[in-house]
Image (cartoon, rainbow, N blue to C red):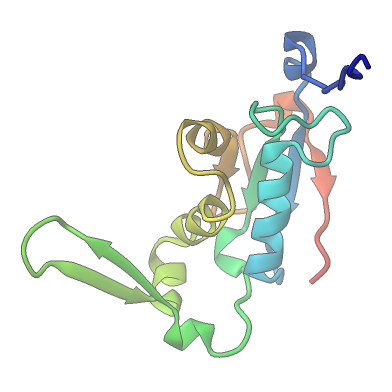
Length: 150
């Protein structure tokens, strides 16, 4: 009995060239909800041509990074750790201090944790543009406004 051929959709190079730009304003938006939506757009899961092993996602611009909300006691209890590679040099900061000093890094780390690890995830992260203010320099790309439920 002949076996049936399975068909699998693979994204062509022409479809990869048609990337859109999205703008997300983080003013009053919960960090985790926004990060999962951003990761989904960077991967391309919102497109019907999604292929897991290729970078078929869109560009994302994040504005007002310092105004993201954290629920519960995360501002005081959540710790961001960084080791300097010297003995005993583990640096720890609370989320409150990180948002005050490096708000872009908080969003970058949240999104990075939701993307695939390896070269594909690093390639997707290059399409994420984060700004702590309310202006950006990508007006020429005509980005679409994207709202996330607070």
